[in-house]
Amino acid sequence: MPTMNAGIQVRERHTKHWAPAFKKLRRLKVQKVKLPNFREEDTMSELTPDQIRSRMKEQGILPPRSWMERPITISATGAVFEPYIPPEGDGKLSSLTLGGAKQSMEFLSKKSKSMLAVRKIRSFEDNFSPSTFAEEAQDIYIKAHKALVEKDYDTLHQCVTELCFPLMTEDLKMCTTRWQFLKSLEPPRVVHARCTDIINKENIFSQVTVRFHTQQTLAVYDRFGRLIYGSEVVAKDVVEYVVFEKHLANSYGLWRIHEKIIPDWMPAREPGRKTYVQQKPVVESEPVADTAVPATPTEQSAAVA
Amino acid sequence: MEILLRQFQTKSFLSICKCLEPAYSHATSWTSGNAMLGKTLFHTSNTVAMPYNPPKGPRKWPIYNKKIFAPQLPGEERRPAYVCHMRTNIKYSPFKMWYVASMIRGMSVDEAIKQLSFVNKQGAVHVKEVLLEAQKLAVEKHNVEFKSNLWVAESFATKGLVMKGIRRHAKGRVGLVHYFHCHYFVRLEEGSPPAHFFFETAPKTTKTLLSEWVDEMRQRRIPGSL
Image (cartoon, rainbow over all chains, first blue to last red; front, top):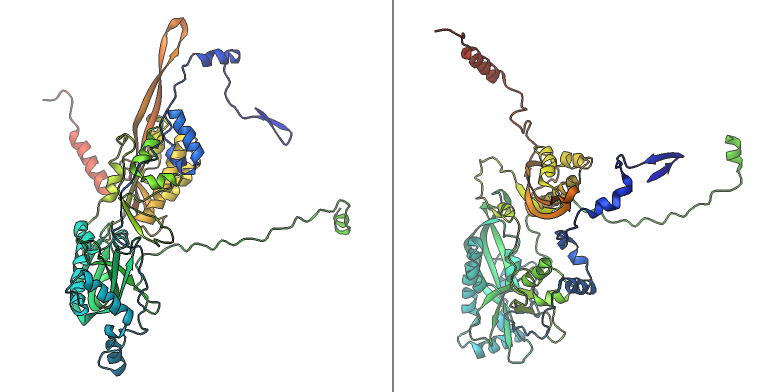
């Protein structure tokens, strides 16, 4: 097509058939073949339901049966109910000082709501006691972390709830982890307990928060074996508030790690060795008002001319 | 058609109702229940509503991305990261794509993208898109720190689907028309590109030149001699 470019005619096609009058007949010589569209998936997410329906009609696919029932199993709750609020500065004072001793004297028996929850748990589990449970909880904690390191997901599902599982495994899927539990600096202690029911009043879930003060080493290597977090040699003192959950109404229910309570006052973790490009904040520029060009010559333009 | 059917197989029924939004690939699907339930997790099982269509096309190239290397010892040289990416069934001839694929071998990613922007071929558009996708993947998922610190280690194209059509020629003769597709594969590696990627174009060292000259001299024979 000839185009006008500052008064000069420019033809964009550089080729021309020697007999252009027979183009239509020449086109009819080739049988058109319908090729499959392999780039369809890229635009699939932008389609509206009506568009999807029309495409399916074109291809002769029936929509999926709408009366299909799906069995649903609620095996874990989606959050921590009435979370424990750890006292500020916990774990910083030595238990030999007065302040530290006071902190460790935080008795569960003084918390009425937690004791009610413990009594509820005892109605399902006869020999449940906070002191024995704390030790069991530490065993579950160690078992879960060992399974995570070895990528033994069968054992990990036994030790960890459905809420916790993706949080633990997602980032470490392409990584190698080396974790060691060195020792427990203070005996584990149950600090909080709550019971809730989902849908029915009989379908009870119990959540128990256990406080751990331990010494651990953690080293995370990326896919290529390069260290990205921590160290295999340097031990760290860890104060953690781990929430364990059990589906009491289920006779096959297990005590599993559900969540971790990270208070605001806790010092930030060691930053990873990876750098990121900081996203520039989107600055909304003020709309520029179009200034009208004067039709009549002003003094300045007249002076230039 | 197959692509739509595949959607129903791999994704849960609940997610399809939400206008084909992406869902988790494993069995559990997260839904926020009503006020009575609060925020609960539903553990559902996938129901098969559609007939099974096996995946087609090349699938081995992205498996290289799943390989996990053992942690490196403290004294070892840092292993360079790499990412393998591909695009299947591009509507372009593999014979034509060869020119574009071989052009960028051994170039740094930035240089390759720059050059491809000005190559007068349809295939270059696809190759450029694949490179940009691969660069993004490398930074987001493969622990590559700087997106410019990548070079094209492997770049090649193979034959994809070939559909055959017919055309007529003069005097009732029939001709076959091939509608070619190709698959394009690329591997980006972390680091600066090597000085000489192609052995043939690398300048020879004095040692090799000397040994070659000596061999040539020793091969000389006097014709017709005993």
